[in-house]
Image (cartoon, rainbow, N blue to C red; front, side, top):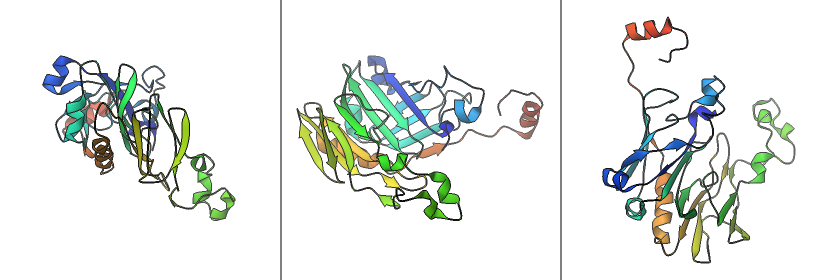
Length: 253
């Protein structure tokens, strides 16, 4: 999936935002700073500055207009613990990777207190998730060749990996799906390992600080994030508007 189908956003929570259950997020991938003019590279799934709308069971990222956005809104299921957990001053991180997996994290006082889903691009100390090296060694061009064996002995089989490598409190541990570890009052569970394929699937992790929320709630949140997303398209303008925009180079439909 090209970068326009992905996105990583962060937004600070305020008192007003919590009461309204809506606040602005900003793109943290640097797309705006290094814009190239190519919509596949510059655009993001809901633009550069979407709004987040949060209820007890649903989180929605809504684009501010069509500029730099591919869809109007992206929504997915969450659990009530997310709304109950957030405090003024927290920073909410949300990401969608190239395999369409969702990652979510909450940072409080510069420390990660809750994370779920594909946390590889959202993590903060003391948790580090290592993407499997097998994926980096794949020669994807060989998949489409007449001789798939050209990828060599390093080509892994399709399917889930045996484990995910997670570093917690300075210790790197290989955790199989369903396994958990607790160190220094922090718990991480591998809900599911990465799946090799086209497009494949990232590992699904749940992380929580024990004095902030129940780890069972973090695991349930990770399971909800794996259920997929809802996408809302922009309404199509009338034909005469599309024709007028087509006659004006540089204008987006």
